[in-house]
Amino acid sequence: MDLATIIGIILSFGLVISAIAFKGSILIFVSIESLLIVLGGTIGATLVNYPLSRVFGVFSVVKHTFFSKVDSPTDIIDQFMEYANRARREGILSLEPIIKEIDDVYLRKGLQLTVDGLEPQAIQEILEKEVIYLESRHETGAEILSALGAYAPAMGMIGTAIGLILMLQTMEDPSTIGPAMAVALITTFYGAILANLVFLPMAGKLKQRSKDEIVVKEMVMEGILAISKGENPRIIEEKLTSFLPPKDRRKET
Image 1 (cartoon, rainbow, N blue to C red):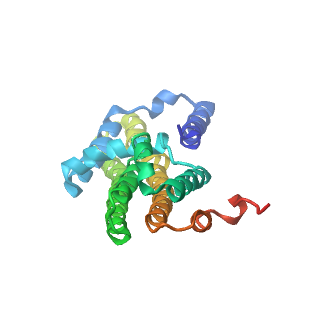
Image 2 (image 1 turned 180 degrees about the horizontal axis):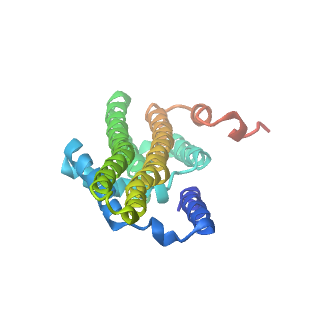
Image 3 (image 1 turned 135 degrees about the vertical axis):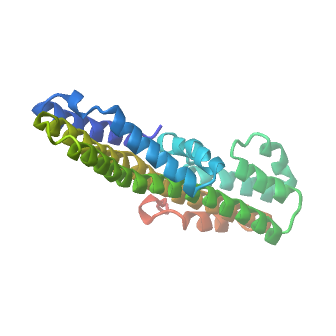
């Protein structure tokens, strides 16, 4: 579980609600009509812009903002050093029993292609396509969340316009002006909150998650190609270490 996402949501909403509670009742910010306009309009506009399957698919992508498991680069290096040394001592076919025990589908597929004897160029083409499609799926999820973040404030303004029109129609009764104006402005508040505390931050988190995962995939691909070419384990280690920032690299002893 990503604590930064959980803490960020709790902290941002908690501070906003606390600020409201200091000056008045939180209940005056509750408006079902405003919520229906903002949420309904935002979801509706998104469905117009994107196919239904992609909109529903974004819900499975959103979970990556809360739950994401990315292998440690140093663990990957250790893993490949073990594979490279074993392949060098006992041959590439000695990796076959290990493949079934690997949880990472991408790594398992790459090693299986290597054991099956495919040429490095063919292996690279297959693995690169996997990365391209993965990146495309992530980009679509982040794009839809960004669209939600753009539509929510716009629908808030539309809701405010609706509220103001209704208010102007009942101006003969001054007692209705204040409550009507409050409801009108609440829709703008809802739109801004949903966009800036939920949709846009989640889109940013997904983009960062995608970058991190792509780097790991490229690192795994580099290791698989090196093993398929029969390169020296020491050379493989150097290649994989180049993916790490200098501060995370192991010191030479």
